[in-house]
Picture 1 (cartoon, one colour):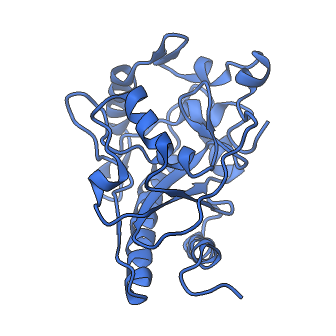
Picture 2 (cartoon, rainbow, N blue to C red; picture 1 turned 60 degrees about the vertical axis):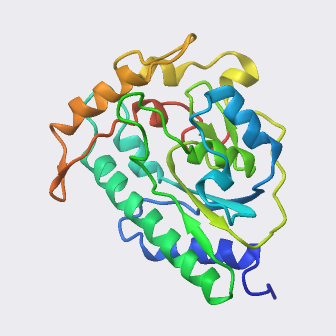
Length: 253
């Protein structure tokens, strides 16, 4: 039986919470991974993406373990957003509600850890970026890479055993838990064989290319999409066409 506050208990809690918040069949079984706040890969991320990205202790000084989790979307939700047409309403709704679910998971995990004498902290699921540079000080996907949940693919998304279509969250734990190993195999078909560029072709504004990712083109499209997506009283800036397009959207190739 797992001890209170163990990795197994935390993973089981995340699985139960997501299952209980899924009346529409939007989600598959969530994944969770753990990394050390001292992992040298965090420094490598800063070297690659820039000094604007924070280290775990820059975000919360008390952190010893970084918990990353991934909530993968269902095949129905993914297939409903494929194609050149407008973003599906369910895709926009899932974005809003999954972000709220990630916030709830963070609060509940903080409470659970605190009740055992181990303070914790979390970071918002989205919109934690600079409005001028469109760069975020914390990348949930990069943290998930360190925690062994996948590897980056050609589409600038993290691809793991459950694909890349879904949402990530991060919780900072003051307890020290064993880090998870990182996968050695590639999950992106392009990096495995050079044969797939489905995600690049699916981008309606050409923001993805061999030269890299044009975040300004992407964000302009998101804002354009938001004009037609009024969901639960707010304009929702989503797209996801690259994420849902390829064979790696739902599972590893």
